[in-house]
Amino acid sequence: MEKIKVAVLGCGNIAPVYLKNLKRFGIFDIVACADIDLDRAKSIASEFSVSQVLEPDKVYDLDVDIIVNLTPPQHHYEVNKRVLESGKHLYSEKPLCSTLKEAKEILELAEKKKLKVGCAPDTFLSANIQTAKKLIEDGWIGRPFAANCFILYGGPEKWHPNPHFIFKKYLGPLFDIGPYCLTALVFLLGSVKKVSGMGMITYKERLITSEPHRGEKIEVEMPTYVTANLLFDKGIIGNVTVSYDVPATNLRGIEIYGTEGTLVVPDPNFFDYGRVLLKRHDDKEFREMPVINPFNYDNLRGLGILDMALAIKLQTPLRASGSLAFHVLETLHAVYTSLQEERFVDVKSKAPDVPLLDMKLLREVLYI
Image (tube, rainbow, N blue to C red; front, side):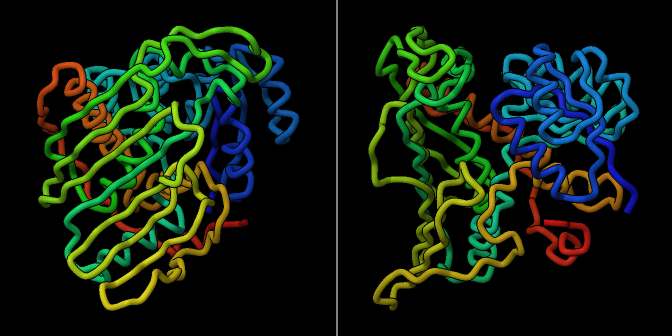
């Protein structure tokens, strides 16, 4: 297959794993790295043997197929719009945009220009979650009727080099961690129909203990402990709880309850964490289930870009799509509205039906 030309815009904390995997996937030609901090861009480019380092404004003029937007979330709308206006396909880190109005405009622009929009998280393409989907489809737990997802930890100010933006409006754990939970659950169980939510700001200030901003304080604008009840279109009841306030917990990941058994799925924030466990009602204990895809347990963030490249070149289904990201974003905003206004909130959009990965095709193009 002809090489897919890619440029990466934003060289912050998440960029190295993306570049590492784009290199490993074999079909990509990484043309350039760009960042407002040119020294940071040069460092990343040197580490991954990328020939060009550019200022952000120069990226849009490149001869590339896909621009990968890894800038902070508050810049996603502006950057994503410029990517599409430049005639390039777009793959964006989550969330797609801060607001639904912005996200809708991006998707409408892409449709008008006949361009594809992909969006993280792509962790639902992991071996674990793909396996869980196949087990559900094959009836191993009967009819799913309920699910829980917990991602609880002590907060990004302890490890992130620039954590300030994560506590600002339209982020916090709901919009930062929530996409991992909701994207996985929507992939496994279908569209969300209605939500209710509760949340709190546990600490109004956060003390940064990571470098290089150690000792600085952050004013918190968003709830840092959020729990949401979900009603899916299929009648399944779900719960999602996310927090930056819980440094120690035994609750991590997804459990799905069916009429014939229980399925345990590892933390959807990761590609390479844990195992899939199944216990049918007549089993004495949980058993580990073999995974169905060839990726074993490895951190493959950016796999969604490979899937997107195949969708562009071969007209295969786009899985980590803008339309899936939009449904997740609307659900997140519905939860946020609910916790503010203390009421149930309907979700109007529908998520696309996302097929399992095509293992045969991926084995043909993947070089790991």
